[in-house]
Length: 251
Image 1 (cartoon, rainbow, N blue to C red):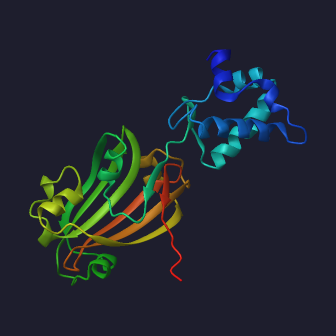
Image 2 (image 1 turned 90 degrees about the vertical axis):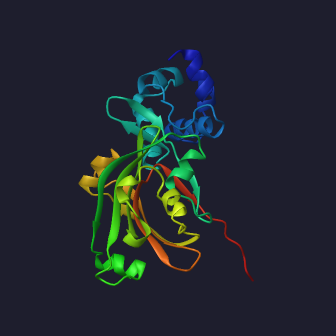
Image 3 (image 1 turned 180 degrees about the horizontal axis):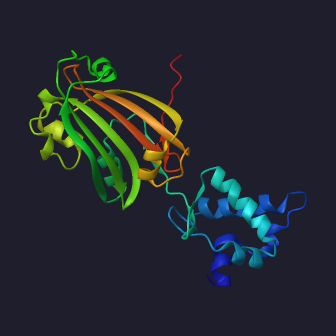
């Protein structure tokens, strides 16, 4: 990366000499400004630490500390052997009921999936509770790893009462599209979100370190007749999403 390119992204070296402010914080602020102003965007690679340190006339230890803090803040991410990247975060509103496919396609991303399980069976206890089923009512399970532009973005385990899915092996794309074809697409949902430490198996699938912070979401979808037709559990990399909700004062 040329010196001019570093200058364009992060400003002239003399801007990193604010009195009373540690140098690593000034480097950190410079990177954040470059992201906020669109000079680097999600997925872009940062210059090598050595180049930044030389150009900004600071030590590599200073640059490393700034980058480490931004990785901790999930602004940056590192891929072994590939470098340091600006995190690609997807902003997803919580006040609109949308499928993974709809959210990603609205952002111009190409959606692919890897099937981990597609089966018919008896419901587990939590599935009976969520879907208001008797223990002898069959369900269909769809478990898949979802990709956007080739990057693992979600693990999704969906359970649907079998009466709503005529042929589970015919589904390839959006679950909500299939449910809409069957006349039972959810029109509202109950969602529960919490942070979890990802286990080794799911971490390997999502290509993130074991015990990384991940977002776990349970969704129970309800159709226009008030019937519970979907129970989906999803795991999302913690550095890939911002979930946004509008909150109003009802007083």
